[in-house]
Image (cartoon, rainbow, N blue to C red; front, side, top):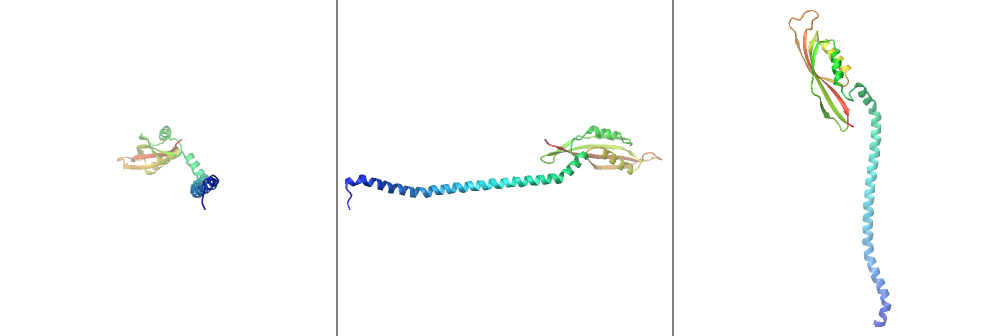
Length: 187
């Protein structure tokens, strides 16, 4: 079969359709593959977003549960003055209310960041005085500790006998270093 010049215009359309079909046959699988890959990436991203959302919901539920569990302990610490601002003036007043003759030195305050939401403040005082016996020292430390907000920590005490003490006179010279620890919420 011979193709003549006058048949060319009639063959143009079928040849164009065959070439177009070939182009689509080559292009469509590549385009479909790219589309499938994009959909897979979107699916992975959606799954990751869903997993993160579920994790946040679970974290919120744990926080809610923990809040209920620890709320009473937190309130108790607030009532004891462990959480809140420490008042050095209140400490001085409580030291002055004691029936023990003493001198005291309030040392510089320092603070440490204890967590993302609390700063631990430490106020230290050195107490020197004379007591009748060891029980009076314990009574003094208990009285000051319970009257002053914060968590009192006795870092150390030294005791020495007073020579020549008689009757109802103090028999012991004492020196104690006491720290008050408070937690100050960070805002």
